[in-house]
Length: 440
Image (cartoon, rainbow, N blue to C red; front, side, top):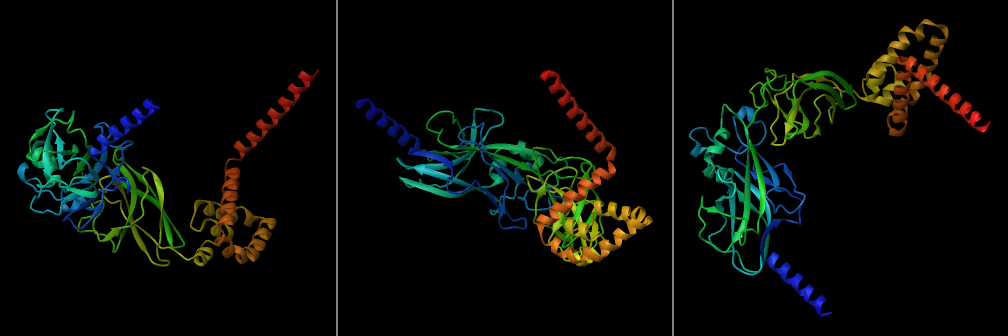
């Protein structure tokens, strides 16, 4: 019993010591890092990767993707301001709104402490340089703080000037840079900016690591071009099939997005910020695939929509726009009249190659025979009555689509189907003969 009591006290003491002073990820919210910028948005959400643990090891940090300005026409969405010129004036440090807001949980149970941020010295892997002290007064003893602490990209680049050179605005060598930042507590109030600290041992090993990826990379036509190969109209939607001549790095690729033009553009395959474009990116993100199709919903029937496709990376930079296409969605009644293939149109709810195939089969095969013409006549007398009911029942629509795909496959690949049946029949006969031999 004494041993158990001693172990409990030991664990409690150890726990208290661990909690005595520490910086941790907030547990009351998902890891959500925001940015406050002067680049056209007061606040933006940054893409983050939450670590599997508590980010207390440099090998398992929380990751934040920070977009940096290159030029207005190439930056596209939101970004943190940079300044062209000498590296020491890389970031517009006079604009205090350009900060990343990092959510932290600060625990100060046994002493008055100060919160610091330090960036890893790229010339000495064992050293970190202080880049920010969050208060000249100590944090109140015995408190837990759950707040977002601001950190400006300028804080990092003011210390690691040479590493940030290519992140300057209008840089001819756009690039990405990675910076390890360590948030920690100390009872010392005298750490100054650029002072080196070693955090491998106590008392400075109470913090957490963030890896800030910063990028001003752009995507010129030569690096990645997107082509829309076909467009199909549906009820309040359009389906765009596209291919990409290049790919985003798998480390940075995030999504596919659609740009809706407010007017016919005067430019072609240029950045969104180009003066030849007016309009906006639609809100929906599609899964990133180099070659695929996207369904643009929420369009207005009978109204032309001018659309382009772009790829989005984790910094929220987008590639240059694909050449635009136009689509005019139609109400289901109009689609039914247009296609004159009622059940299939109701099932697919849009123009589709399956519908085109069976329409062609109707005109070239069925209409050439008496029985075929009789079938067409009966079909057009009955099908229109059920088309709208089918369109509003997703289960029936799915059945029709499945049947249409199966019939299309059989009609186009009947030799494969026939060989499959022959093979299955031969296998059954073989199994039966084998069982008879074993019985004998």
